[in-house]
Image 1 (tube, one colour):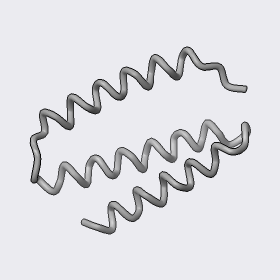
Image 2 (cartoon, rainbow, N blue to C red; image 1 turned 90 degrees about the vertical axis):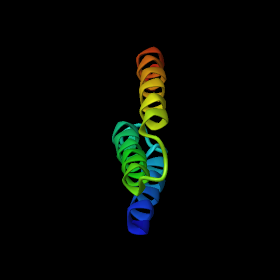
Image 3 (cartoon, rainbow, N blue to C red; image 1 turned 180 degrees about the vertical axis):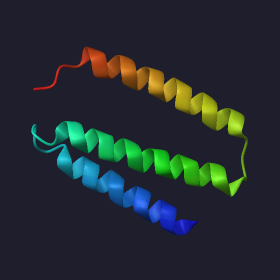
Image 4 (cartoon, rainbow, N blue to C red; image 1 turned 135 degrees about the vertical axis):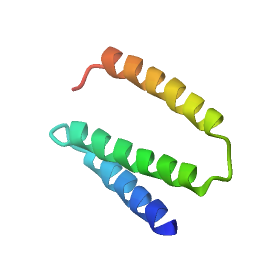
Length: 75
């Protein structure tokens, strides 16, 4: 299970690095989002916590992210 966290962290770091250029920023956001999703899935597969709180967090975070993505203009 730890290898999922390592892959997720690597994807997140690579995604952040890609944000340094306007040409790769959009792809960097996707790579970071995939890394974060992988970390969330790994946490859910552990089974130590309630799915309700994780799902609520995903819904709230996705809503805030979607609104922010439409309001902020790419440069």
